[in-house]
Length: 432
Image (cartoon, rainbow, N blue to C red; front, side):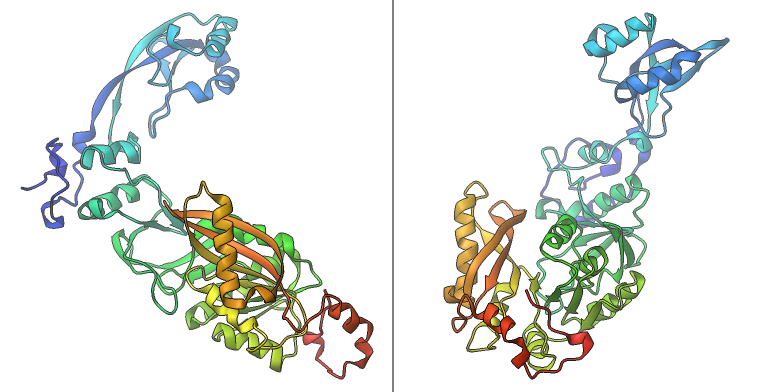
């Protein structure tokens, strides 16, 4: 059966192939006329009255809610929200405002709605099968709208993309996620639904600019709050190691906002190049040093070759970051300092069982690094809900290898004059 989306046919079905679905929109089918309530207001009272009525006026794109009255220069018509059927239907506070301003005249006015006046949800609810979950939300990455269309709506993906493009002026490209992120370098698998074939984006997050090609690196705009939250643990006298830094969403804010020194690493050569560019753009070349290495080799390099004692480690690779905790085991890399490690992971379970999720998160850490390597948990934070039974957590804990006594750090500091290491100024050891 052919699905004529552009015809307004209400006989919709989900069991339909992509090839049978129109990818163009007949905008004429969305034209309709509605009646809205208007109030007659003296022209001189428009400005003060609008400050009080603004949430209750007609709210439609490309339609003016203030109309002139033919042959009447002293008054105008304010069109109210279409949900109001009469003056009696108005909220009490609005009635009081009208009463105080001696506004008593009202009338109905015919307004023509076109495709351009309608919201994304209104258009898609007309086009998609009855009962479908309308995909009106998406991740915005620069000029790119990134959708994650469900399997049942996949045949409609191109027309959904066109509606998203039409309704969001800042969007130039619409893409759809394909499958899970399973590549070594964490690139998204995606298809272009409509718009420009341009993946070079510029994103401003919390006042910091990031540039990258969205096809070549990992980026998640939903982590903007998390990128800022973690900064509370750092200070300008500390060194932070970011093992899976991407294009720098944790590393660069730490340098810009806090002023601490950051050693930022990513295995993806493209991420490494964009991270270096972002360091320059945000003018923190003196604070951020970039590396392109395997995460474990990076930590070995910093500890064994550079002789740097760092205060924090960021491990933002939720699908597998906990596996890299093994590098901090005594049998892998003996270290004589106690950094705080912030490791991200996915935990499966009900969001309602927060205590249970926290225990599962701790268990993931201890299964790899060993309970005897955890001096204390600093914080266990639920970052966001990923799926109905899947949460993203950040586990922050202080590392202490079994050969370290609680007082070892203090003793070393008191006897620091015995230290024969002569690091460069850039690698100077900073004590906790």
